Length: 278
Image (cartoon, rainbow, N blue to C red):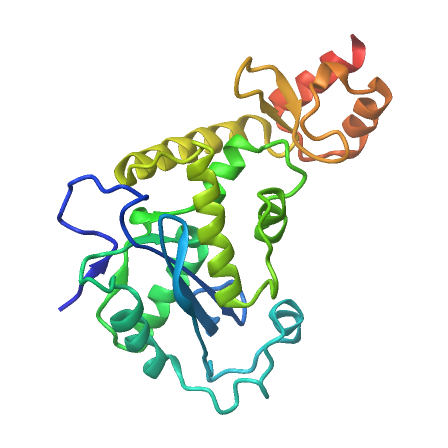
């Protein structure tokens, strides 16, 4: 029988301050859920922003060669996983031991860009190995969504950079357990800053709303521009002038962008042209 993890029939609201939060991450051979495999999976439990116990992680023998470009990112090579268990062994342990709170309740799930990457990858491995459980991506909190909306002016939104901006130490980046812990701490920082609602259902609803707004904004401006979250004036969305009002950016730079950027949307190009002539 299949169980959709993170998709409880209990619709009562839960506080992120009072319930266990399960942050997870994986490292893989690549980005294609159909072809690539998991080589490491890690998780950390939190309650009220405090880590419960130690990080948990496991190397996974993917059964396929690990490409050199993947090894360059996470440092895991064929030799490293040669004697590691397969996902057929690791997967059930991950489900049974790590995706349920110690008190038997369902934990709140959290992963950095997890709905778009980690969850599909884990679910593909679960399916591939005949393990019935699934993670519902719509029930997983993703700090990246809140960072993309509220901190669009930051020059990067990779976990390592975001953790640094939040005053969080991330040692061993691209290690699944280290990234999982950093993700949980970033989430807690955003909750403390009132960027993420304390109520789990409210946080999920806000996440869905911000995802829709970000998608609409991207369709209008691409990477080039975004609208100020308060006064809605156009601001530069990339480069050395990221976050700066387009009206305040040097006109020569805007003209250079017009000549070099062939991915400008029509609306973004019109705003660049207007500002370059002002």
